[in-house]
Amino acid sequence: MYELLGLGDGVRDFTDNRDKRRSVAPSGHTSEKRTVHSKITKKFKTESGQLVFHHGHGGEVQATDGTTYLDFVMGYGPVVLGHNTTSFTRAVAESLTNGVMMPGYTSFHEEYLDRLLADQPGRRGAFFKTASEAVTAALRLAAIETERRGVIRCGFIGWHDAQIADSLKWHDPLASPLRYKQKYTENMRGVGDSEPVLNWHDLSLETLEELIDTHRSTVGCLVIDAYQASMTTPELMRRAVDLARNAGLLTVFDETKTGGRISRLGYAADHGIDTDLIVIGKALANGAPLSMLVGSTEHLATAEKSRLSGTFSKEMLAVYAALATLDELETPRGEFADGWAELGAVGSQVASCIAAAAREAGAETLVSAQPVMGGAMFELTYAERLLGDRASRDALLDSFTDAGILLLEGHPSFVCGAHRDNDWDELTRRSAKAFTQWLTTTGGIGK
Ligand SMILES: Cc1ncc(COP(=O)(O)O)c(C=O)c1O
Image (cartoon, rainbow, N blue to C red; front, side, top):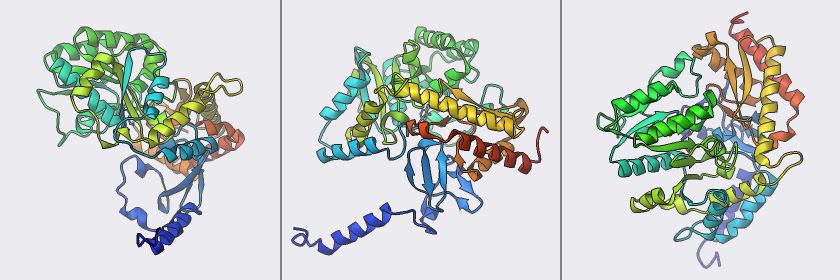
Protein backbone atom coordinates (compact mmCIF):
# COMPACT_ATOMS: atom_id res chain seq x y z
CA MET A 1 0.00 0.00 0.00
CA TYR A 2 2.86 2.38 0.74
CA GLU A 3 4.10 1.71 -2.80
CA LEU A 4 0.63 2.57 -4.13
CA LEU A 5 0.78 5.90 -2.34
CA GLY A 6 4.29 6.46 -3.63
CA LEU A 7 5.71 6.36 -0.09
CA GLY A 8 7.88 3.24 -0.33
CA ASP A 9 11.29 4.73 0.25
CA GLY A 10 10.07 7.48 2.50
CA VAL A 11 8.69 4.99 5.01
CA ARG A 12 12.07 3.32 5.35
CA ASP A 13 13.65 6.72 5.92
CA PHE A 14 11.21 7.56 8.71
CA THR A 15 12.02 4.27 10.41
CA ASP A 16 15.72 5.00 10.23
CA ASN A 17 15.22 8.40 11.81
CA ARG A 18 13.04 6.96 14.53
CA ASP A 19 15.63 4.35 15.39
CA LYS A 20 18.32 6.99 15.55
CA ARG A 21 16.23 9.17 17.86
CA ARG A 22 15.52 6.26 20.16
CA SER A 23 19.14 5.24 20.55
CA VAL A 24 21.67 6.89 22.86
CA ALA A 25 21.99 10.64 23.01
CA PRO A 26 23.62 12.04 19.86
CA SER A 27 26.87 13.69 20.85
CA GLY A 28 28.27 16.88 19.46
CA HIS A 29 25.20 17.91 17.49
CA THR A 30 24.63 21.60 17.03
CA SER A 31 20.88 21.98 16.72
CA GLU A 32 20.62 23.56 20.20
CA LYS A 33 21.82 26.79 18.60
CA ARG A 34 18.48 27.05 16.81
CA THR A 35 16.51 26.81 20.03
CA VAL A 36 15.35 30.08 21.55
CA HIS A 37 15.77 29.59 25.26
CA SER A 38 13.65 31.14 27.96
CA LYS A 39 15.05 32.39 31.20
CA ILE A 40 14.11 29.12 32.84
CA THR A 41 15.65 26.67 30.35
CA LYS A 42 18.86 28.70 30.23
CA LYS A 43 19.61 27.87 33.86
CA PHE A 44 20.96 24.41 33.14
CA LYS A 45 24.48 24.69 31.84
CA THR A 46 28.02 23.43 32.43
CA GLU A 47 31.35 25.02 31.57
CA SER A 48 31.03 23.63 28.05
CA GLY A 49 27.69 25.34 27.53
CA GLN A 50 23.95 24.89 27.62
CA LEU A 51 22.78 21.39 28.58
CA VAL A 52 20.64 19.71 25.94
CA PHE A 53 18.68 16.70 27.14
CA HIS A 54 17.93 13.50 25.35
CA HIS A 55 16.00 11.13 27.61
CA GLY A 56 14.98 10.44 31.17
CA HIS A 57 14.41 7.38 33.26
CA GLY A 58 12.68 7.45 36.64
CA GLY A 59 14.16 10.33 38.62
CA GLU A 60 17.12 10.92 36.30
CA VAL A 61 17.75 12.59 32.95
CA GLN A 62 20.55 12.23 30.46
CA ALA A 63 22.05 15.10 28.51
CA THR A 64 23.59 14.85 25.04
CA ASP A 65 27.06 15.07 26.58
CA GLY A 66 26.35 11.65 28.08
CA THR A 67 26.06 12.87 31.67
CA THR A 68 23.26 11.55 33.84
CA TYR A 69 21.72 13.97 36.33
CA LEU A 70 19.48 13.48 39.31
CA ASP A 71 16.51 15.58 38.27
CA PHE A 72 14.67 17.75 40.78
CA VAL A 73 13.42 20.15 38.13
CA MET A 74 10.91 17.65 36.76
CA GLY A 75 10.16 19.89 33.80
CA TYR A 76 9.39 22.68 36.36
CA GLY A 77 6.81 20.50 38.11
CA PRO A 78 4.84 18.44 35.59
CA VAL A 79 6.69 15.12 35.94
CA VAL A 80 5.14 13.61 39.03
CA LEU A 81 5.50 9.83 38.57
CA GLY A 82 8.89 9.89 36.86
CA HIS A 83 10.39 9.86 33.39
CA ASN A 84 9.33 6.98 31.18
CA THR A 85 8.06 4.82 34.04
CA THR A 86 6.94 1.44 32.72
CA SER A 87 3.26 1.38 33.65
CA PHE A 88 2.65 5.00 32.66
CA THR A 89 4.33 4.67 29.27
CA ARG A 90 2.50 1.42 28.56
CA ALA A 91 -0.90 2.85 29.56
CA VAL A 92 -0.47 5.94 27.38
CA ALA A 93 0.78 3.87 24.43
CA GLU A 94 -2.22 1.54 24.68
CA SER A 95 -4.67 4.46 24.80
CA LEU A 96 -3.15 5.93 21.65
CA THR A 97 -4.90 3.28 19.58
CA ASN A 98 -8.09 5.36 20.08
CA GLY A 99 -6.61 8.32 18.23
CA VAL A 100 -5.38 11.71 19.38
CA MET A 101 -8.16 14.11 18.53
CA MET A 102 -11.90 13.83 17.84
CA PRO A 103 -14.35 16.50 16.63
CA GLY A 104 -15.25 17.25 20.24
CA TYR A 105 -14.65 16.10 23.81
CA THR A 106 -14.52 12.36 24.45
CA SER A 107 -15.49 9.77 27.03
CA PHE A 108 -11.88 9.99 28.26
CA HIS A 109 -12.31 13.69 29.10
CA GLU A 110 -15.57 12.90 30.89
CA GLU A 111 -14.06 10.03 32.87
CA TYR A 112 -11.17 12.27 33.91
CA LEU A 113 -13.46 15.03 35.18
CA ASP A 114 -15.71 12.55 36.99
CA ARG A 115 -12.71 11.20 38.85
CA LEU A 116 -10.95 14.52 39.43
CA LEU A 117 -14.06 16.22 40.79
CA ALA A 118 -15.61 13.17 42.50
CA ASP A 119 -15.88 14.99 45.84
CA GLN A 120 -16.75 18.40 44.34
CA PRO A 121 -20.46 18.19 43.51
CA GLY A 122 -21.67 20.96 41.22
CA ARG A 123 -18.20 21.78 39.93
CA ARG A 124 -17.25 21.55 36.28
CA GLY A 125 -13.97 21.84 34.44
CA ALA A 126 -12.70 23.45 31.23
CA PHE A 127 -9.71 21.87 29.47
CA PHE A 128 -6.63 23.83 28.41
CA LYS A 129 -3.03 23.03 27.58
CA THR A 130 -1.15 25.57 29.68
CA ALA A 131 -1.98 27.22 32.97
CA SER A 132 -1.42 30.65 31.46
CA GLU A 133 -4.35 29.89 29.16
CA ALA A 134 -6.52 28.74 32.06
CA VAL A 135 -5.65 31.87 34.08
CA THR A 136 -6.42 34.04 31.04
CA ALA A 137 -9.80 32.27 30.91
CA ALA A 138 -10.37 33.06 34.59
CA LEU A 139 -9.50 36.73 34.01
CA ARG A 140 -11.95 36.92 31.12
CA LEU A 141 -14.69 35.33 33.21
CA ALA A 142 -14.03 37.85 35.97
CA ALA A 143 -14.21 40.74 33.50
CA ILE A 144 -17.51 39.46 32.10
CA GLU A 145 -19.08 38.82 35.48
CA THR A 146 -17.93 41.98 37.27
CA GLU A 147 -17.53 44.32 34.28
CA ARG A 148 -14.17 45.31 35.79
CA ARG A 149 -10.96 44.26 34.10
CA GLY A 150 -8.36 45.01 36.79
CA VAL A 151 -6.63 42.21 38.66
CA ILE A 152 -5.04 41.87 42.07
CA ARG A 153 -2.34 39.25 41.90
CA CYS A 154 -0.40 37.43 44.58
CA GLY A 155 2.31 35.26 43.10
CA PHE A 156 3.36 34.18 39.64
CA ILE A 157 0.20 33.47 37.67
CA GLY A 158 1.44 32.92 34.10
CA TRP A 159 3.38 34.52 31.29
CA HIS A 160 0.61 36.18 29.24
CA ASP A 161 0.92 39.98 29.19
CA ALA A 162 -1.61 40.86 31.86
CA GLN A 163 -0.30 38.04 34.07
CA ILE A 164 3.38 38.93 34.01
CA ALA A 165 3.35 42.72 33.58
CA ASP A 166 4.95 44.54 36.53
CA SER A 167 5.54 41.20 38.21
CA LEU A 168 7.79 40.59 41.22
CA LYS A 169 10.26 37.82 42.02
CA TRP A 170 7.40 36.01 43.68
CA HIS A 171 9.18 32.83 44.74
CA ASP A 172 11.62 34.69 46.94
CA PRO A 173 10.73 34.92 50.63
CA LEU A 174 9.02 37.97 52.08
CA ALA A 175 12.35 39.06 53.61
CA SER A 176 14.26 38.98 50.31
CA PRO A 177 15.03 42.34 48.70
CA LEU A 178 14.92 40.63 45.28
CA ARG A 179 11.23 39.83 45.75
CA TYR A 180 10.14 43.43 45.38
CA LYS A 181 11.92 44.44 42.17
CA GLN A 182 9.28 44.95 39.46
CA LYS A 183 9.92 43.16 36.17
CA TYR A 184 8.36 43.22 32.70
CA THR A 185 7.30 46.84 33.04
CA GLU A 186 7.34 47.74 29.31
CA ASN A 187 5.26 46.81 26.27
CA MET A 188 2.65 44.67 27.98
CA ARG A 189 -0.91 44.79 26.70
CA GLY A 190 -4.09 44.53 28.71
CA VAL A 191 -2.62 46.66 31.48
CA GLY A 192 -3.33 50.30 32.25
CA ASP A 193 -5.37 52.69 34.34
CA SER A 194 -8.71 51.12 33.41
CA GLU A 195 -7.35 47.59 33.81
CA PRO A 196 -4.61 47.71 36.44
CA VAL A 197 -2.59 44.68 37.45
CA LEU A 198 -1.74 45.13 41.11
CA ASN A 199 0.62 43.16 43.32
CA TRP A 200 -0.51 42.00 46.73
CA HIS A 201 3.16 41.67 47.59
CA ASP A 202 3.44 41.20 51.35
CA LEU A 203 0.55 38.90 52.29
CA SER A 204 -0.74 41.46 54.78
CA LEU A 205 -4.52 41.75 54.98
CA GLU A 206 -4.21 45.49 55.54
CA THR A 207 -2.33 45.85 52.24
CA LEU A 208 -4.96 43.81 50.43
CA GLU A 209 -7.78 45.85 51.94
CA GLU A 210 -6.07 49.06 50.87
CA LEU A 211 -5.57 47.78 47.31
CA ILE A 212 -9.22 46.82 47.05
CA ASP A 213 -10.41 50.12 48.51
CA THR A 214 -8.19 52.23 46.27
CA HIS A 215 -9.06 50.38 43.07
CA ARG A 216 -12.60 49.26 43.83
CA SER A 217 -14.01 50.69 40.60
CA THR A 218 -11.52 48.88 38.35
CA VAL A 219 -10.54 45.53 39.91
CA GLY A 220 -12.71 42.47 39.30
CA CYS A 221 -10.49 39.60 40.29
CA LEU A 222 -8.09 38.33 42.97
CA VAL A 223 -5.72 35.58 41.82
CA ILE A 224 -3.51 33.85 44.38
CA ASP A 225 -0.72 31.45 43.48
CA ALA A 226 -1.19 28.71 46.09
CA TYR A 227 2.58 28.53 46.66
CA GLN A 228 2.36 31.94 48.38
CA ALA A 229 0.32 30.22 51.08
CA SER A 230 3.51 28.45 52.19
CA MET A 231 4.62 31.85 53.53
CA THR A 232 1.54 32.36 55.68
CA THR A 233 -1.40 30.50 57.22
CA PRO A 234 -4.55 28.94 55.74
CA GLU A 235 -6.57 31.24 58.00
CA LEU A 236 -5.00 34.36 56.45
CA MET A 237 -5.68 33.01 52.96
CA ARG A 238 -9.29 32.28 53.91
CA ARG A 239 -9.73 35.83 55.16
CA ALA A 240 -8.13 37.24 52.01
CA VAL A 241 -10.61 35.34 49.86
CA ASP A 242 -13.52 36.52 52.02
CA LEU A 243 -12.30 40.11 51.84
CA ALA A 244 -12.13 40.03 48.07
CA ARG A 245 -15.45 38.26 47.64
CA ASN A 246 -17.23 40.70 49.96
CA ALA A 247 -15.88 43.52 47.78
CA GLY A 248 -17.43 41.88 44.71
CA LEU A 249 -14.25 40.40 43.22
CA LEU A 250 -14.12 36.97 41.64
CA THR A 251 -11.63 34.84 43.58
CA VAL A 252 -9.20 32.41 41.96
CA PHE A 253 -6.73 30.03 43.59
CA ASP A 254 -4.03 29.26 41.09
CA GLU A 255 -2.93 25.72 41.99
CA THR A 256 -0.71 25.27 38.95
CA LYS A 257 2.27 24.11 41.01
CA THR A 258 0.25 22.39 43.73
CA GLY A 259 -2.83 20.80 42.12
CA GLY A 260 -2.17 17.13 41.31
CA ARG A 261 1.16 17.36 43.14
CA ILE A 262 0.45 17.93 46.84
CA SER A 263 -3.02 16.37 46.49
CA ARG A 264 -5.72 15.90 43.85
CA LEU A 265 -6.77 19.58 43.62
CA GLY A 266 -4.24 21.33 45.81
CA TYR A 267 -4.06 23.66 48.77
CA ALA A 268 -7.41 25.49 48.73
CA ALA A 269 -9.44 22.29 48.47
CA ASP A 270 -7.31 20.65 51.18
CA HIS A 271 -7.91 23.57 53.56
CA GLY A 272 -11.55 24.18 52.72
CA ILE A 273 -10.81 27.61 51.22
CA ASP A 274 -13.83 28.30 49.10
CA THR A 275 -12.69 30.19 45.98
CA ASP A 276 -14.89 30.79 42.96
CA LEU A 277 -12.39 29.24 40.57
CA ILE A 278 -9.37 26.94 40.76
CA VAL A 279 -6.67 26.63 38.12
CA ILE A 280 -4.69 23.39 38.06
CA GLY A 281 -1.93 22.38 35.67
CA LYS A 282 1.64 21.13 35.59
CA ALA A 283 1.53 17.79 37.48
CA LEU A 284 -1.80 16.49 36.18
CA ALA A 285 -0.46 14.34 33.38
CA ASN A 286 3.14 13.42 34.31
CA GLY A 287 4.57 15.86 31.77
CA ALA A 288 1.89 15.90 29.09
CA PRO A 289 0.37 19.36 28.64
CA LEU A 290 -2.88 19.70 30.52
CA SER A 291 -4.40 22.47 32.56
CA MET A 292 -7.92 23.00 33.85
CA LEU A 293 -10.16 25.75 35.05
CA VAL A 294 -12.51 24.37 37.70
CA GLY A 295 -15.54 26.15 39.08
CA SER A 296 -19.26 26.12 39.70
CA THR A 297 -21.84 25.41 37.01
CA GLU A 298 -22.75 29.11 36.90
CA HIS A 299 -19.21 30.41 36.37
CA LEU A 300 -18.43 27.77 33.77
CA ALA A 301 -21.68 28.52 31.94
CA THR A 302 -20.25 31.99 31.34
CA ALA A 303 -17.14 30.31 29.92
CA GLU A 304 -19.29 28.41 27.45
CA LYS A 305 -20.66 31.68 26.10
CA SER A 306 -17.33 33.46 25.77
CA ARG A 307 -15.19 31.27 23.51
CA LEU A 308 -12.79 29.98 26.11
CA SER A 309 -11.12 27.12 24.27
CA GLY A 310 -8.87 26.39 21.35
CA THR A 311 -8.13 23.68 18.82
CA PHE A 312 -5.97 21.68 21.19
CA SER A 313 -8.24 21.97 24.22
CA LYS A 314 -9.92 18.70 23.21
CA GLU A 315 -6.73 16.82 22.37
CA MET A 316 -6.61 13.36 23.97
CA LEU A 317 -2.94 12.56 24.50
CA ALA A 318 -2.74 14.59 27.69
CA VAL A 319 -5.98 13.11 28.98
CA TYR A 320 -4.70 9.57 28.46
CA ALA A 321 -1.62 10.63 30.40
CA ALA A 322 -3.74 12.28 33.11
CA LEU A 323 -5.86 9.14 33.57
CA ALA A 324 -2.72 6.98 33.79
CA THR A 325 -1.29 9.45 36.34
CA LEU A 326 -4.45 9.37 38.46
CA ASP A 327 -4.49 5.56 38.31
CA GLU A 328 -1.08 5.50 39.96
CA LEU A 329 -1.48 8.37 42.40
CA GLU A 330 -4.83 7.07 43.69
CA THR A 331 -3.33 3.68 44.52
CA PRO A 332 -2.07 3.03 48.07
CA ARG A 333 1.63 2.25 48.09
CA GLY A 334 3.20 0.46 51.07
CA GLU A 335 2.62 2.52 54.21
CA PHE A 336 1.17 5.42 52.18
CA ALA A 337 -2.56 5.91 51.60
CA ASP A 338 -1.90 7.20 48.09
CA GLY A 339 0.81 8.47 45.76
CA TRP A 340 0.47 12.06 47.01
CA ALA A 341 1.32 10.98 50.57
CA GLU A 342 4.33 9.09 49.26
CA LEU A 343 5.52 12.09 47.21
CA GLY A 344 5.42 14.23 50.36
CA ALA A 345 7.62 11.74 52.21
CA VAL A 346 10.05 11.39 49.29
CA GLY A 347 10.53 15.16 48.92
CA SER A 348 10.95 15.59 52.68
CA GLN A 349 13.71 12.98 52.55
CA VAL A 350 15.40 14.83 49.65
CA ALA A 351 15.30 18.11 51.59
CA SER A 352 16.69 16.44 54.68
CA CYS A 353 19.62 14.92 52.71
CA ILE A 354 20.47 18.33 51.21
CA ALA A 355 20.24 19.98 54.63
CA ALA A 356 22.53 17.28 56.08
CA ALA A 357 24.99 17.88 53.23
CA ALA A 358 25.04 21.62 53.97
CA ARG A 359 25.97 20.79 57.56
CA GLU A 360 28.63 18.32 56.43
CA ALA A 361 30.20 20.94 54.14
CA GLY A 362 30.05 23.65 56.82
CA ALA A 363 27.60 25.75 54.80
CA GLU A 364 24.64 25.44 57.15
CA THR A 365 24.79 29.00 58.44
CA LEU A 366 24.31 30.18 54.85
CA VAL A 367 22.01 27.72 53.19
CA SER A 368 19.77 24.77 53.92
CA ALA A 369 16.77 23.01 52.38
CA GLN A 370 13.21 22.49 53.56
CA PRO A 371 10.10 20.67 52.36
CA VAL A 372 7.33 22.88 50.97
CA MET A 373 3.64 22.10 51.48
CA GLY A 374 4.13 18.56 52.71
CA GLY A 375 7.24 17.74 50.68
CA ALA A 376 6.18 17.10 47.08
CA MET A 377 8.19 20.30 46.53
CA PHE A 378 11.22 21.51 48.47
CA GLU A 379 13.33 24.64 48.41
CA LEU A 380 16.73 25.97 49.28
CA THR A 381 16.65 28.46 52.14
CA TYR A 382 19.22 31.20 52.64
CA ALA A 383 20.63 33.22 55.50
CA GLU A 384 19.25 36.75 55.30
CA ARG A 385 22.53 38.25 54.06
CA LEU A 386 22.52 35.93 51.06
CA LEU A 387 18.93 36.65 50.00
CA GLY A 388 19.88 39.65 47.87
CA ASP A 389 23.12 38.09 46.57
CA ARG A 390 22.10 37.03 43.07
CA ALA A 391 25.62 35.97 42.02
CA SER A 392 26.22 33.61 44.94
CA ARG A 393 22.81 32.07 44.56
CA ASP A 394 23.37 31.45 40.84
CA ALA A 395 26.78 29.97 41.61
CA LEU A 396 25.16 27.49 43.99
CA LEU A 397 22.94 26.20 41.20
CA ASP A 398 25.99 25.75 38.97
CA SER A 399 27.80 23.82 41.70
CA PHE A 400 24.85 21.46 42.04
CA THR A 401 24.83 20.92 38.27
CA ASP A 402 28.56 20.14 38.40
CA ALA A 403 27.83 17.59 41.13
CA GLY A 404 25.21 15.89 38.92
CA ILE A 405 22.09 17.33 40.52
CA LEU A 406 19.61 19.57 38.73
CA LEU A 407 17.46 21.66 41.00
CA LEU A 408 15.98 25.14 41.23
CA GLU A 409 16.85 28.07 43.40
CA GLY A 410 14.61 31.06 44.01
CA HIS A 411 11.81 28.63 43.14
CA PRO A 412 10.67 25.37 44.71
CA SER A 413 12.23 22.22 43.28
CA PHE A 414 10.12 19.16 42.52
CA VAL A 415 10.27 15.42 43.17
CA CYS A 416 8.60 12.48 41.46
CA GLY A 417 7.46 9.07 42.71
CA ALA A 418 10.48 7.39 41.12
CA HIS A 419 12.73 9.29 43.52
CA ARG A 420 11.64 6.74 46.09
CA ASP A 421 14.50 4.64 44.69
CA ASN A 422 17.12 7.35 45.28
CA ASP A 423 20.41 6.28 46.79
CA TRP A 424 20.12 8.68 49.74
CA ASP A 425 23.80 8.44 50.74
CA GLU A 426 24.80 9.28 47.18
CA LEU A 427 22.43 12.27 47.15
CA THR A 428 23.97 13.55 50.39
CA ARG A 429 27.51 12.95 49.07
CA ARG A 430 26.88 14.80 45.80
CA SER A 431 25.11 17.66 47.60
CA ALA A 432 28.02 18.04 50.04
CA LYS A 433 30.36 18.17 47.05
CA ALA A 434 28.23 20.95 45.56
CA PHE A 435 28.25 22.98 48.77
CA THR A 436 32.01 22.53 49.17
CA GLN A 437 32.69 23.66 45.58
CA TRP A 438 30.35 26.62 46.06
CA LEU A 439 32.07 27.72 49.27
CA THR A 440 35.42 27.52 47.48
CA THR A 441 34.38 29.34 44.29
CA THR A 442 32.52 32.09 46.10
CA GLY A 443 35.50 32.71 48.37
CA GLY A 444 33.96 31.13 51.44
CA ILE A 445 31.31 33.80 52.04
CA GLY A 446 30.24 34.00 55.63
CA LYS A 447 33.09 31.86 56.93
C1 LIG B 1 1.13 29.40 39.82
C2 LIG B 1 1.39 29.38 38.34
N1 LIG B 1 0.45 29.84 37.50
C3 LIG B 1 0.61 29.82 36.17
C4 LIG B 1 1.77 29.32 35.61
C5 LIG B 1 1.91 29.29 34.13
O1 LIG B 1 1.83 27.97 33.69
P1 LIG B 1 2.17 27.59 32.18
O2 LIG B 1 3.63 27.68 32.06
O3 LIG B 1 1.64 26.17 32.05
O4 LIG B 1 1.45 28.52 31.29
C6 LIG B 1 2.79 28.83 36.43
C7 LIG B 1 4.03 28.33 35.84
O5 LIG B 1 5.05 28.19 36.46
C8 LIG B 1 2.60 28.87 37.85
O6 LIG B 1 3.53 28.41 38.69
